[in-house]
Image 1 (cartoon, rainbow, N blue to C red):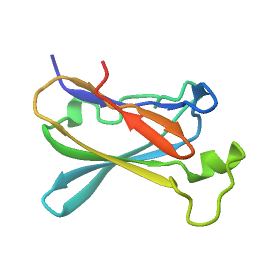
Image 2: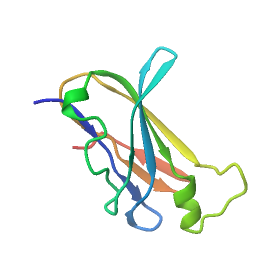
Image 3: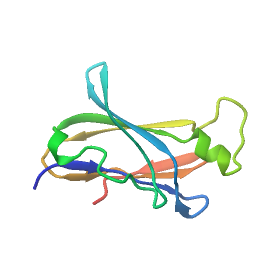
Length: 117
């Protein structure tokens, strides 16, 4: 199976997909971060295509950064600056040619993730 990476965001406080969240993907090597992709979540809370498609996949360490501030404010979760979860980084490793799915389960004051399918 060829490797690729997908993600999605679910708003666990509202019980719905989180639309309009910008996501950046970085390849991490030591102290170096190289941005390799950006995407925005659609009405289903997913990106329209894999954020790291088969033709660009390499094993290694990666970081997804979810820019949640505008989404949370639009949902009425105004907070003093800086917001508690304005940006959420998730660093993870991919060590085989496989489908990796790294979702974000989001609420205004907490989040979780897991390796999905």
